[in-house]
Image 1 (tube, rainbow, N blue to C red):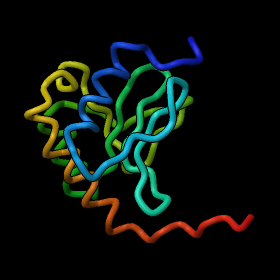
Image 2 (cartoon, rainbow, N blue to C red; image 1 turned 90 degrees about the vertical axis):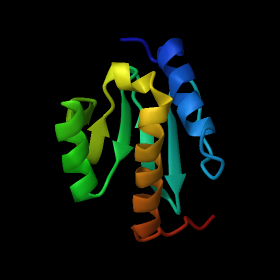
Image 3 (cartoon, rainbow, N blue to C red; image 1 turned 180 degrees about the vertical axis):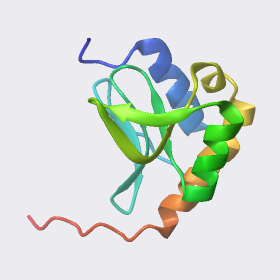
Length: 117
């Protein structure tokens, strides 16, 4: 496996994140993600799989509606993250409301303490 995210998938992920004015993409070609108050809420794996962090009801609804699965990264299931099916990643109009739900869910999470330097 390459140590960088597939360029085509990274471009689609960037387009999704750019569709929301309040969300800033962090990281680069090896690791790209979004975070709010220290809590990551979207990410793209090195395999090019996009994950959205959702609350329980939205998580369950997403899995059922899109026949999706939990996101796996480095062989482990990422708790609260759904894997966005590849065909849905190209459908921004359908996916954008779920990005909003992920952002709203991140706002409910307890802020992570900042590291002292």
